[in-house]
Amino acid sequence: VEVPAVVAAYVDALNAHDPARVAALYAADAEVSQAVSDGATFRGRAEIAGWVADNLGGLPDLVVTTDAVIAEGDRVAWAWVYAGAY
Image (cartoon, rainbow, N blue to C red; front, side):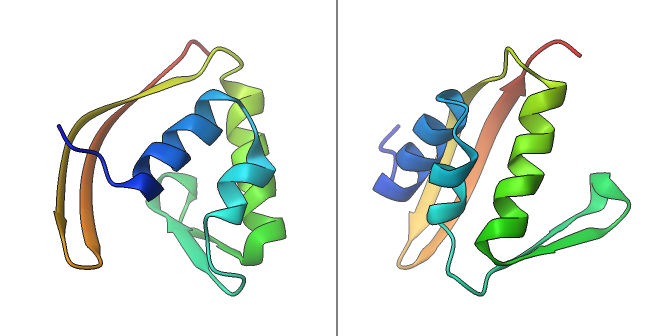
């Protein structure tokens, strides 16, 4: 599977348990909406980093792996496994 650089960087940052590195991959004005967080929306890098930190706090042994990636132009579909024990 050829993994685009941004996906590889995201996986590396998550596996390093580094919320700031994850957030830095988003645009400064990015918004992330999560269905699993009761539809919560996180705006900007600081809130995104906080959301990632909260996730990592609940999964201190988190390991992310990539199953498949489809990239066309500036669009990416990514199948991943987000594994850890609560």
